[in-house]
Length: 154
Image (cartoon, rainbow, N blue to C red; front, side, top):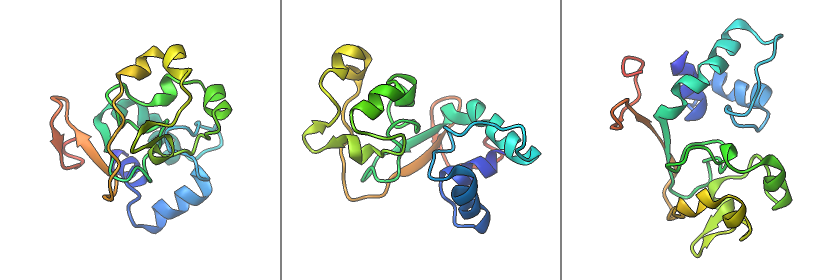
């Protein structure tokens, strides 16, 4: 099941991944969809293992165009959706589909200044350097070392 989740996160080129993104996720992150009782057994199992392996999946920011600002783990604090409320995300003019490049530019954070007071932990996050490279998804083992993803490693 971890292979299928990894395929969805990395947007592996396959008909199954494209179908899941189009019909199951509907432009949402795999991290934000909820398990429904009418879902197939396989889909429910994939969604159930998310919390188990999430801490091992780290996004390295390049251009910030494919990494979710709120749901993907791209900073040491984990997903920002665990810190910033949905109400504040929407009030600031962002959506749950916002990417990292939507909340940062070369001069720093583009989110409201009052977030630094409301969520002081955000002050610990250094703005990522946006460049022309693609974002990358990495697998971090239990010792914190980046490795090539494989089912054996999981």
